[in-house]
Structures are given as C-alpha cells and as structure tokens.
Image (cartoon, rainbow, N blue to C red):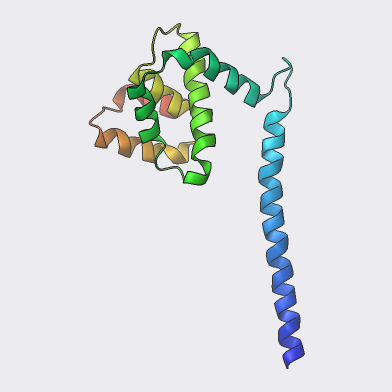
Length: 145
C-alpha cells in the first residue's frame, strides 16, 4: 500500500516538474526570439530600446505617471516588460507623427496598439475612471494585435 502511494507521488511530482520546465522554457524561447535580429539587423527589443531612447526627452513627469496608471492592472512581475513594450510603441508613434511632446492621445493609442485585445478591457475601465472618452480610439481597438 505504501509503495503504491509513493509511486503515485513520484509520478505526479514528475509531471509537475515537467510542466514547470515546459512553461519556463516557453517564456525563455519567446524572449530568445524577440532578441533575434530581423532583416534590418535589429531585433524587436533593439527597436523598442531605440524608440524609447529617441523620445525620452518628450516625456513629462505627468505623462509618465499616466502611463504607470495605465499599466497598474498588469501583474507586478511583468509590469516593467509591459511598460517597455508600450513605451516603445508610443515612441514609434511619436517619431512617425514628429511629435514635439507626448500627448494623452499618443499614450492611449500606443497602449492600444502594443497590447493584446484581452488587455483592452482594463484600459477601457481605466479611461472610464479618468473620465476620458474612448470613442476616438475605437478604430485602434480594432487594429491591435
């Protein structure tokens, strides 16, 4: 009886370890793919860093605070990564539009385009809390990945 119980324990422990290793490997592989250079010689993370550095001077403390409020629903463990991805997209939009400063519109548009659809409900909720009309951004909600 005790031997059977121990065998089942070993079996479930092996499955659990395999699942955890698979999950960790999946996230490590995703990071590896983002670091791989594309046709232009730069990776996704290189471009993200480029856009952030090029537009760093356009951000005011108030706009940084607004971005931090928007990413609050993201779990703390992933918040810095999410903020970097979103800030990179916002920087890309700012350079495309030749913006002289970051605007609320650019921040919201960049947030929408940089995040998956499942995160948009949190953005809509946050915009509603801040009394910001989401209607002008509806077309971006449809475009996002």
